[in-house]
Image (tube, rainbow, N blue to C red; front, side, top):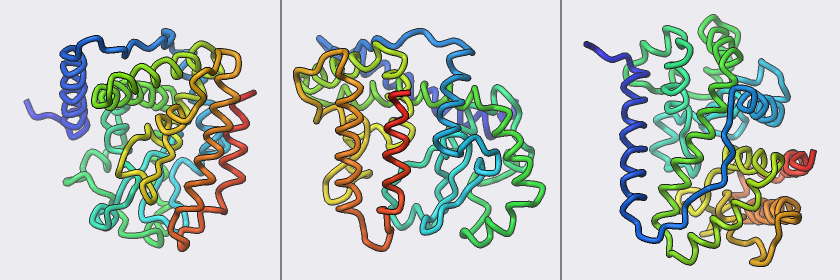
Length: 279
């Protein structure tokens, strides 16, 4: 039986997850248990609504977007990155996530046929100009409709990616670091607002502790923020301290970023998003 592209990509992802679980099982005294509450369809839809609001202002038009100055489109409620061949060759510092999301969500709701027909599964637009010309044509219209109708499953994908990637990266760290990061994360996960902040920030700025997502050796992901939180934080001040630290490291990111990227233009929106974690 011939597998569809989506199923082939999903199979690769599942095999990677099994490898992560096996690796975790081999670690002794592994402090990786997360106090993540059980999530149902209502929870996933609520997460999806919040992420969609932050990334696209609840506007379906922004579900297919290509930022000025970037070498790739950002698609879906989580603005999942789909790297062009040129971006991959230039060693862009941002992680590609759209192919994996496509594979996961396509098993829930069939994707537009033109996506499944891509072989290889690569961005069909060479640059932003081509993308903008195609934006109002049938393929991208169909893609936006699919992305709008699958918000809950995209949120489910984000949570599954967080769990798998957290586990994978955690077991590569010294035991003391594992214990510290896990303890701080569980303080955040103890509240609904903290849970949302964790999942949204992971989707927003990555997991962290990743040499590929740094400027001048400094990262800005979830683990980077957790590592810099005070050791004596409590459950009640975990979220305010996390927001404060995330702001600090995003300011640092801008200061260290290549000037031609003009990342300062995004700071106000980034801060607004972080402040929204209190709502």
